Image 1 (tube, helix red, strand yellow):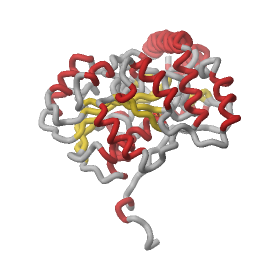
Image 2 (tube, rainbow, N blue to C red):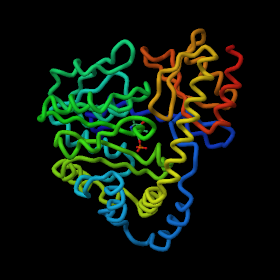
Image 3 (cartoon, rainbow, N blue to C red):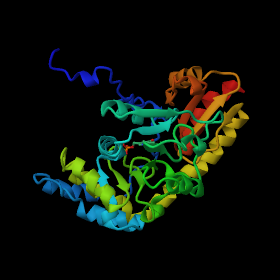
Length: 347
Ligand SMILES: *Cc1c(COP(=O)(O)O)cnc(C)c1O
């Protein structure tokens, strides 16, 4: 086809975890929250339907006010988009002028975006034990991006270490993807007031039970927000629809429910970690809503297949360094117990 853009001939798209169309599976493969959205969400979303003939508010005023208040920053420090994937896409379009550096094991979308937007990429291997050593980033001049806590390793870096990385070079942008921070990491949002070269990316998909609504955000200095808005308003000013805005607002209005669900996931994580260890797994200490675990006898792919045969979906990555592991999302206690029952044969 002569009309294709050759720059994308080798593009390898991101492969999302399976989303089966039936309810027969226990889904522990895409780090969704096992609990439903805040109780008021249904009413709030329903109320927008009478106004669906209108375009959504391109500045997301109400949601913006509530989110900025929740994060303890000013509205001029917040950017909203259709899921954090879209935020990240805009970052790769505009904020990687000096190239990008990220770990070999981290969120798979960074590599795809870099390819998509032709960004010069430096991949920096994690340490042998899957931790990040910032000494490895000393000479890097391009934008640094990784998830903190990282995925799929579930490890987090401390606030002090992160601040040292950001402070090391004010000319170098550090983008921290905090998709899982609510489950036990330390957020860098307060540091955005101090450092103009820090951008924090967050999402409502994991800790706010709204993966299906598609809502993500970034926090940083006004100049960075302005650049992200330039890209967004050159692409789709309405990327957040009215229903999603209402859902996001409803989530932020019920912080009690938010905390309750977070605590439940964290408790279930502790229970599941212990039970997996009893079955001969090595489980990395998790600051997220998933566990990264490997069995002493059974290969990752086999575990994945065995669970799938019993209608439990987990995530397995074929990447060489991590192919012995499976990533298990923390579900409800009942879901975890079923998953563990299937694993009992390993005992
Ligand atoms: C899930 C996830 C995202 C994507 O979140 P959306 O807001 O649903 O697009 C981004 N980064 C990491 C590390 C994730 O795990």
